[in-house]
Length: 112
Image (cartoon, rainbow, N blue to C red; front, side):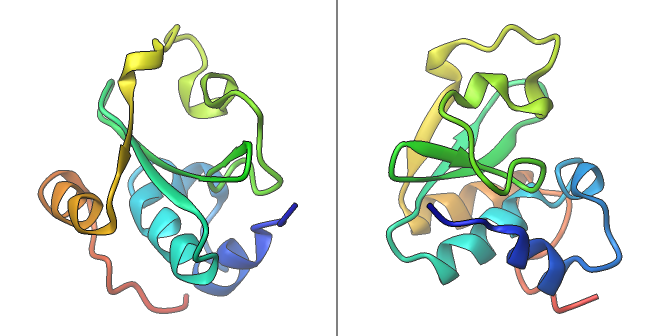
């Protein structure tokens, strides 16, 4: 399985994974999708939202570059008791449209 540390190292070299997940998770997920064409994009619409990807049977975000089997166990959801219906798979078009309206940054992020 892939290790997505390279996304963080290349695009967010001066940013911690926690900070990425606190405002630019959708950019991280988008950059990962561009690198891994088979990745599926997901958004979680609870508690300010969170963007993650899925490759095979594992879910990934900046804090979980090696993936986890259950997205509800990600650090972003600690103490929130997430429900399965919070997670929505999105097409690339819908993902970009959703996060362009709800995200805290821009998809055009360059390297740090």
